[in-house]
Amino acid sequence: MPTISLCMIVRNEEMHIARCLDSVAGLVEEIIIIDTGSIDRTVDIVSGYTPKVYPYVWKDDFADARNYSFSKASMDYCMWMDADDVLEEPQKSKFLQLKHSLPQDVDMVMMKYNTSFDEAGKPSFSYFRERWIRNCQKYRWIGEVHEVIPPSGNIFYSDIAVSHKKINAKDPDRNLNIYKKMLAEGKHLDPRQQYYYGRELYYHKQYEEAVSVLEQFLHSPDGWVENKIEACSICANCYYGLGQEQSALNALLRSLAFGMPRAELCCEIGKYYLGHGDCNTAAYWYETALNRPKNEYAGGFMLPDCYDYIPLLQLCVCYDKMGNQKKAKEYNERAGACKPYSKAYLYNKQYFDSLQVS
Image (cartoon, rainbow, N blue to C red; front, side):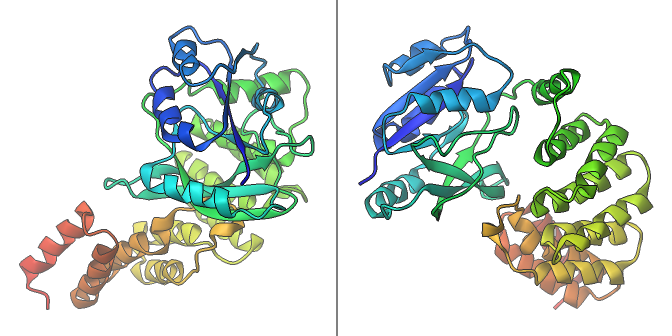
């Protein structure tokens, strides 16, 4: 059975860290904590879980800090978590089962990362991340921000999910400031860094600069296709912010140049046409979203609701506006089968009941 070193970098995480460590401490053989300058009770709390707590002088470089944590590990695999992550109870038995059944030649285990949740706690945004990584020099983090270990070797996909559940928001300017510092120091951003820098600019409503950076990324012959598709969506949101709706649509349609339609983009295109009163065209795109297969293993960001609940609910709206209440009700019932607790579904149900639509 493989052994695992949990390797974490933390700073001022007294609100989160015990919850995180309680969820996983009994499942791993070693816990490594790299503290980057806490001034709260974080070090005292983590010292109750492990003696392997090391100070680290922060350098505005997440990859360097994570690599330092890996350098302290002594087990077969390194596992990373953030302080506001948690391995929820249903996942723990699967975690132990995987430890007992994992083939010996696996280099990297990819696990789901759930980072957003609906009103019932069901994941609404998820993607795969490298989670267990063979402890050897071959595997090291890269990237000062949004750090990653490029997947390679014998990769194993697991349906085990780590959930990212913040209690308090962190510094919203941190990542953008690191990118701006890198540029001020004359550092070159590779395509992946360009994508994430553009995304940070969008988050800060610096729409014109965000589009400029993302256009450079989209014109590059390099770069991951899933990031390019997502970049089209971000550009569209920037154009909406600038009041340029036709440019927003063009950005969404541009995503089709990079591969088969993704349900997420189909829903955004449908939303554009619905907002402009073209219910027939909107319905086409929502139907397309509904019929797109999920490809969780492509590695990109996934909004599960875009493959069933959202297009079903929006098709209900489309057909109601087109005067076909019977078909609208059918789509609403299908949306309700996905999320019977949905306020939108329940509101629509009451509406159709009032019309006595059979």
